[in-house]
Length: 184
Image (cartoon, rainbow, N blue to C red; front, side):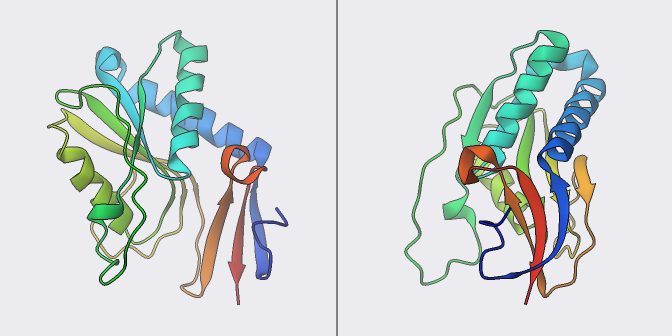
C-alpha cells in the first residue's frame, strides 16, 4: 500500500487484499440472495475507474457460486458530474454490452462518500434505458452524504473525518489490493 499513501500520512490500513476478497464474496452472495427470483435479468455496471474491476470480480464470484454469467459493463460519468465547471474533462467512454431496459442493474464503485458520483452514475445509466431497478454496491462507505443516497451492498463502513481520504488500491489498476485512510 506504499504507492497509495505516497506523500500522505497514512492514518489507518483498513482492508488487506484478503479482506477485500472476503467482502466481495459476501457482497456477491447478498446480490444473489436479494435477486434470487430474477437472476436472468441481473447485470453489473462498474463506475470508472475502480468500480469496473470490482464489478468483474463480483461477476466472477457469481459465476463460481451459481454458474451464472452475469453481464458486466463500464460507466463513464464524466459528463454527468456537477463539479467540473470550467474544466475540460477527459471522457473515457462507457461500454455497456447489453440492454439496460428491464434489467436489474447493480452499479459498483469503490467508495461511497457524498453520493454525487452515484447520482451522476444513475443519470448516465438512465440515458441508456429504463432499468427495472438500480442497486448500488460499494467496497467502502465512508459516510458524509450530501445527497439522500445509500448503498444496497457495502463491503465495509469506515467512519472518517472530512480532512481524511480513503484510498482504494486494486491489482488491476494500482498493482496491489488494499484500502487505507490518509490525512494531512
